[in-house]
Amino acid sequence: MARNGELLAHMTSADMARDLDLLRAAVGDERLTYIGQSYGTLLGATYASLFPGRARALVLADPVDTDTWTNRPFEAFREQSASFEYLLDRFFAACAAHQAACGFGGEDPESAFELTLESLDRAPVSMTGPPGTVDGDDARLAAVQAMLSPRDRPRLAASLASAQADDGTGLRQLADEYYAREPDGTSPLIDSQWATLSVDQDYPHAVAPFLAAGRHAASLFPHAFGNSGYSELAFGLSPVRRRPFRGPFVNSSKSGTALVIGMTHDPNTPYAWAKRLTADLGNARLLTLRGDGHDILSSLNPCILGQALLYLEDGTLPPVGATCQREPPFGSYGNVAHRRCRPCHR
Image 1: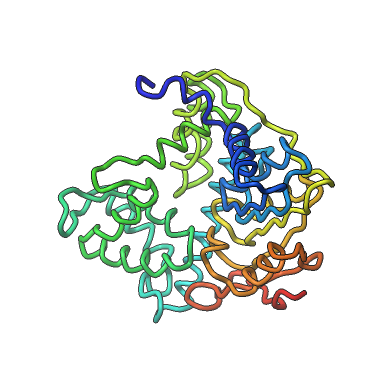
Image 2: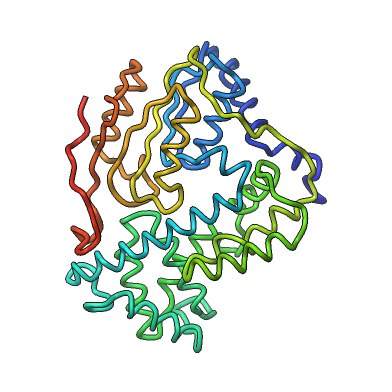
């Protein structure tokens, strides 16, 4: 606050959207072509709402439910936490069904995970190399982080197995990634997120609601409870008092139709959010990737990339109800429902 007090009030998504429009004008583009992922989808939806008719194309992948996120943030974080728990269940089922690839927990990885947490809660383990220990809460954060991409599920399995052998190095690495922690212990990304969310989101400026939300989260989410409630208190305690743009989020018919891309099993932005954002924007088309993760674009799924490129090049939208398929981690999901579906088509 001492260094950036005047700037903090202008860290809103609406201010960033205005900056985007200045950049559009500076490069001489009549209309904006924009690709946003996760939080970037909120920025894209904000731009479309503030500048009707100025968006040529908007790709909004892993989308945020902008209305719930900004106007009912406690609700949004509970939905997010529930999604993380569901993805953990899918991880345990996949791990059990494909032990040769997973290598953790035998026939019952979920029970092995709980026993590992109990052991770490009682007696934290050390790491190889850097000093320090890893406890049960570190392991919970590591598990939440690993749900963001199927590529990290084998890392989580190997790290849990190592923790059983008293080496917490792998879990520490995943937990540090959750906080985007730099080698010097700082986290500029978390700082910038706080600066934006604390003014974007409609939080109360009192402690009691956060304590109540934290108690509720602890009763609902045995592993992802740290994602909501108590952890949101820093947003509510922000000294900035400003009401920025919080909707309605719409995409004018004068703009190009937005392409919203949602993943059916996304831990961070649940698939229901993709449906809600598509409905709220109105002038939008939903493309679905059936699979796990919060990394639609960086997954380099050829079906998704093909459709996105067609759209960005000449505005060609996928058919209504179009879907793409992503291979699940470790193979199929055993006794967890996982529907195969046709490849995305034109």
